[in-house]
Length: 361
Image (cartoon, rainbow, N blue to C red; front, side, top):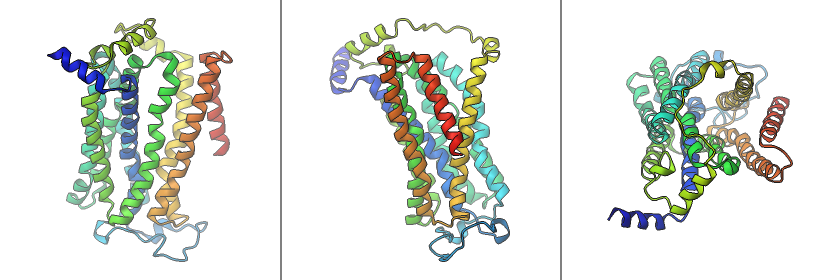
């Protein structure tokens, strides 16, 4: 009976399971980023305006206050948070986020990434749904909001480590550029959707709370689908085809699956590791500064309304996504044609991207 059900399910899934997992991984990161980034737009409509806080002699003049900086939310949903408090609120997510990276990766390697990733996204979704309730019940106490954002960061900090652990067991080396680009493009698409949908939602519903309800529900829906469709490795998957399982075994034959002791000393004293850390810090500094502060700049300095703000804030990430797809294809082509080694190709494209980003800034 079990074998018969397995055969039926295998026939039902025409798409190879590694592609299903990659698509779901894409939506995992997409959901993670929508819940992370949406606050950057929402907070522009959560705060009471104070001339002393927002006066800037270099800001654009406001010709039509109704169409630009007037809040689209009702007045009793606006709170007297200062610019400093807003900065703390926006950064609080990352305080929790960095703390669960390493534990999340270790747990995912030991017990499988499926449930680590699923629980991480689910917890973030629940805290996102609770955001309006916490703000309303505390009457806009920004400290409680900070606590909630830290907890969201705790949950979402496991996303990339768990996903990396899963992909290492599912994606052959020859497909990692393409499928890796697909999965991690979720960060750009998620940022695009977070900005554009948040602006449109607030504009149409006239309440910032709709943003948290919408993206929180989307995260819960993803968790349900992830639990039903995806597994930590091909061996534990109940309806992967025999052909795909054999293919993955052959392609991954040279990759060790032993749970060896983590060489922390070697890692912490490795020059290449610290070079990667420095490169990632450089990337994240520019990326998250733009994610966090661009919507506030567009509202307070350029005086765009929330709908315009959401659209304009999403444009850089649309371009980023397109470029990532094109460069991934070029990178794989150069490796396949043996124009570049895998190592050199990774270094070249990473370095080129970093220098280009710094040049633009």
